[in-house]
Length: 79
Image (tube, rainbow, N blue to C red):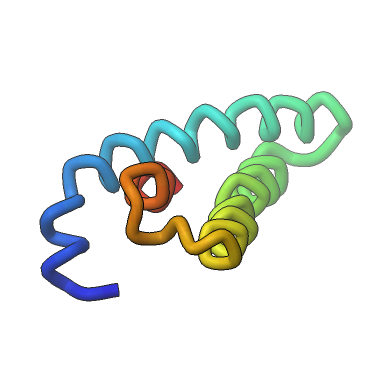
């Protein structure tokens, strides 16, 4: 990842990435608390699961040579 590319995508990264983490982590944390986890444990587990999607999707994009396409860049920014 080149620093120039990250700077050019900073708005998408901050907005889309934050929204994705919150949208995924919030229901997972609620489910964890409903299952009896303390709220801190539920939040940590939920954020870890929400962030794990990045590794899976980035690997899939690389396998399909989509990293440098519009879809690939948008997916990276969101994740």
